[in-house]
Length: 122
Image (cartoon, rainbow, N blue to C red; front, side, top):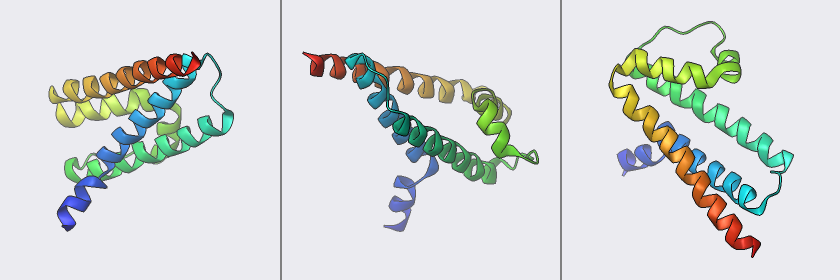
């Protein structure tokens, strides 16, 4: 029971869940042709940065890559560069699969959300 719970509450699962949820909601607003409210955008960025940081800390326990002094600021400023660089450093060629899954989830959830949003508009 404990192992199954740890898998469900793992940083990777939480990161993917957050990504799917956020992009789906963003897609709905695209389909509705309105702007996302500022409080939803703020909540998304805070939770996304937390999830990325949590995932990096947990993943680093496995791969033991040395950290910079202020990884939090670097993540905030340049996470689209830091995360792929970290994946390539730790996983080599397997990093491509992980990056493609991330991009695929991002695009698919946004498109599905936009379709749902446009259906709601009618």
